[in-house]
Image 1 (tube, rainbow, N blue to C red):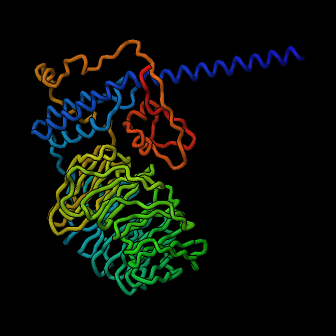
Image 2: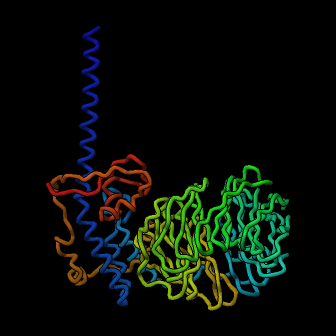
Image 3: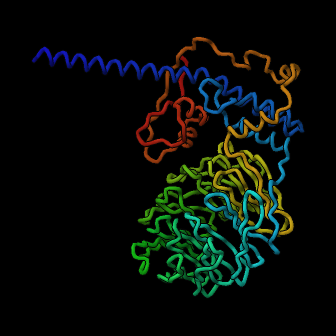
Length: 532
């Protein structure tokens, strides 16, 4: 028996030793991969800068070719060069100048200004609201008007689809909201009772609960789609914003006095409030992160604050010196972009509240009042009082494209759920649908499709692409460097860690073979290396 036990222990030790050796081999392979790709990343950054320079000088075709030289043909292929976001931004700029995109569709039908657009969850329908007191439903493929919803007696401000595509909720400057049955086009509920303008409507995923807020110092909770009034929520001043979680467990309201009230909706007929003096000045916007585990407040005082649903203060987001106007969370991460009255966009991480970046490139000349992420999280769209919608790269913070629109229009834009369409205002009360490339591979594919030539030998020499030092032809047997390891702490993000160590986020993704930016507490990340 003792001999058998010894043999078992020896076998176990051999197994552990084999696993250790395998782990070491994989570790060394990852380090070698970084060494192999380091020069290619630097070259890509160099080429991206040249590409952008050539495009801005009026040579977008050369910019296109230089950017393609900096990018892999197939994103994510380990046998090709690493992907660098700066090169993607340079290619987008070049393609925008080359193709000068025109709208795919122009939606004609409204008789007055269009103020809001929302895509249905399946992307097949676009709903728009207008000063003409109507809502129009459009077929996004054909661009034709499917239906006109009439019933409001004043300007229709906002429209919202239920996730199951059965209902549409709207509110107007007639102090009321309506619930529409999309199968019939008729209003099935008229939500009345407010004595002043509505400022916001929020609904659960299935539209079973509908929250309205108003300048009459109240919020109201209705049962959807019937419109039955469940409760009236009193406040000490005008209620400027409201949100409700998708599952209907929590709601939050914000007032002109700077108070945030968190509502426990366990009993919708008698919600339990928790009032917080969040800001000394009015709260203008509330936003929920993708996990809906807290609520973000934006204020005229130039700061934002993040609270969980127990009312615990988690972070203060600072950096702006003017009133905050709008916020949007990335669809699948902990980043939030905030627009301020100083004309700048800033990117923060939640829940730490760290400022990750300020979009310092020249953007809006006016105040950006609306902002949204594309469904992929790759792009950010902002819209401002300078009558411009600007598309940004969400990783490099570079401006990619610009969509001017007619003056005297305030409009909230929308991406389609697949990220391929963008709705922005057009001339004479119209809406224009533009094609947006939903991911990096789609952009590269389009660039190769539209590519008319290769770089000439003279251009190769001019841009140093014939220099083997710049081409970064790599040694067959690279030396293996020593690694610096970082242990991920609670609340840390990949963006924050990259910023902390002063390294490119692409380097972290490549070295650690990350397929997304999500990291967990306790993970060990290879940050960088030193020569042996």
